[in-house]
Image: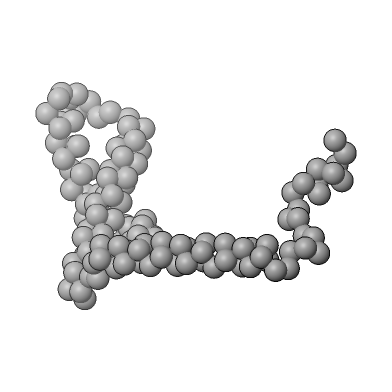
Length: 134
């Protein structure tokens, strides 16, 4: 089959005889389809309106506060990971020994230090995350 005949099969058939009853059938089919489309659109819009909850100003403020807190916590976690890895490069001090209790203390110290760093503004990661999520 040639490409021209393939294109002709895709195009709507228009004949000079599409006046009268055939033309009326085409118009009637278009109107029926449009009515079905309008009905489906109306159902979707009504279902969406019924399920959509509009947040109050207090709910928005509470949500933004929670997002801010989570952003700061995430920055603190990332800072702690970075600080811990950087601390591994520092040579060990033989004065205090190399026991497990010192490692636990240092880990707790790093955690609190990085929490305070994040609360004080950190490196700006919390602000970036907050802006992206709100």
